[in-house]
Amino acid sequence: MRIAVIGGGIAGLTAAWQLSRQHQVTLFERHAVPGFVASSVTLDGDLAGLRVDVPLRVFYPGYYPTLTRLYAELGVATEPVDYATSFSGADGGLYFRWRNARWGGWSVPYVWPQDLAHPRARRIAAGALRFQRRARAALAAGALNGASIGEFVADERIAPEFVDGLLLPAIATIGTCHTEDARAYPAPVVATYAAAGLARHSVRRACDGADAVAARLLAGIHQVHCQAGVQAVRRSPHGDGSGSVQVQHARGDEAFDHVVFATQANQALALLADATPDETATLSAFRYRALEVVMHRDPSLMPTRRADWSPVNARVCAEHPQPESTIWINRVQPALRDADPIFQTVMPQRAPREDRVIGRARFERPLVDTGNTAALAALQRLHGQPGRRVWWCGSYAEAGVPLLESAVRSAVGVAGCVTRAVGVDPSLHRPT
Image (cartoon, rainbow, N blue to C red; front, side, top):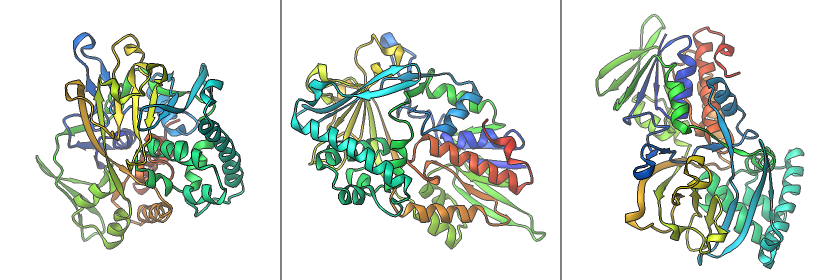
């Protein structure tokens, strides 16, 4: 079978790699390199040639089992990193912080007594303990379905200092969304994430970054077209019940037996020239939020006191719709340990000095709310239709926080759908 995969993010690379084991797969990518590494930055000067992932690609095994298995099958070496986090206000002053005690692959977050000197910090810590107890109990009892996290914490009367000072900024930082978007997150999604071992497993990264992951996946793909400029996709049914799918791109038109969209849902809808009403309604139900990531060397975006710097530093201000998160790259990429400070700021509230900027990247991230359950169910119904030849995968296409895990999990699922559609055992294509 000839199969086209459109989009070279982690979902597209994974789907193409899996399907290439049995089929002739062509990957189309609009960037000059696969999207998974298209925004990464190459440093210069004394660090010439060293690459930094943009955005930073980290994971922890408890919430990323499919990604963890994929890395193991690819032979991608990973290492634990310190992901301790500080929370500061508009004045740059620290108001809460947790640190990590790590032993091998295990990690235990803790708070120093001096970090609890202020009453606000103590109320945040107490709220965190109450939230963990109540959320775990409600999740186990199946009592969270249909509720947003904002509704849950209000009903449980969780301390506002914790909710506004830590919980919502943390969700917004992980999901790269606005604070009110975070408040609308489904309570089961947040509770499941919190219960999946974040307090036990170390955050990890691929030792050689996203480039190593992309290289291994690309090595197994039949054909890769970068700067492909896909313009439209349309189905061409034949009278005998068979069919093909036409992909119109910068180099001409090609016919494929199946096409997998590994793009955002809104981008897939724009490319699918003959979308049915059901496809249009389903893909339109997924919403996105634009965001910016800036690589720079400006320490003014960090907490005011150098002693308060953590690997991850959140700035939470009521006058901004989203928290600002600045990652101290030197603390999470060992090759930069002794270099001058380098930072990656996500959803910046302030602009770093232009002469300190290394690079900028802009993305759109899927939003998650209680309406996503219906949209995901509709997507699964589409995938279950007999004779289907067009498919979708991406971080938006699986339940949970839209991260690398959901992207890879959806790619594995779609590869299984395609292989079943053409009569091949899908178990042959799953990471083990």
